[in-house]
Image (cartoon, rainbow, N blue to C red; front, top):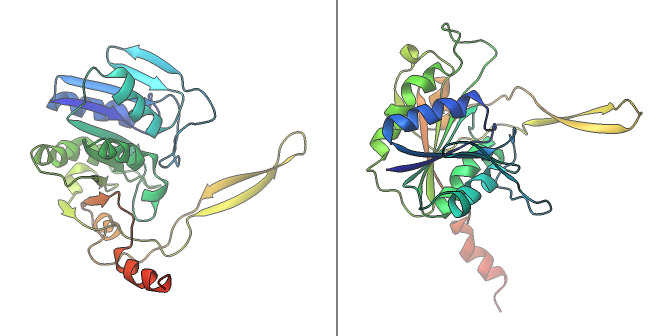
Length: 254
């Protein structure tokens, strides 16, 4: 089995180091291609106005000066000598739950793999201000990621689908199990905008990530994490709201 590992936190992030270790437990043919620096919040974006540069860090380990989508695309089209059987993206230092999925570079990297027809999984470790008792923020992911991935290796994926996995901010021994759940939604917009002045007096704006209040609906990723479970959410690339098609068609008929 051939595996491509990527992320959005950058090639030197601890989460991708952990995911590479896990991938090597499953395969002896592991490739890594990730952004050269942090691309959190990049979403499913391509670098179109600048050249993307490639750097080699070791045997089958590369970084690109671009987005997570760039990294997967270049990994598939320029670096690897054949398509992988699996794309693993992460392990993100922070949750990708509910509405966050649309912003997530981690999930978007897995989307790019799914677009190429490759089984793709995004993995994220929820982070909170309070560390788990062990002090290891990746403790749940460290011990549960392989348990999640292994059953999926021979599980059929529908075309243009992927999985988003989130690990609760707990030590592995406190995790209650795994739940397959739907995407939840937060109660209000997640980002604030902070205004400031640079040393030359020019105004700038910085997007902040405030604590998000939400009411976890039953059967969602938000609820699963809140109750101490690993959440596993199947996602699809078809964003069409099919129930609206007929009504809208009637509006434009005649």
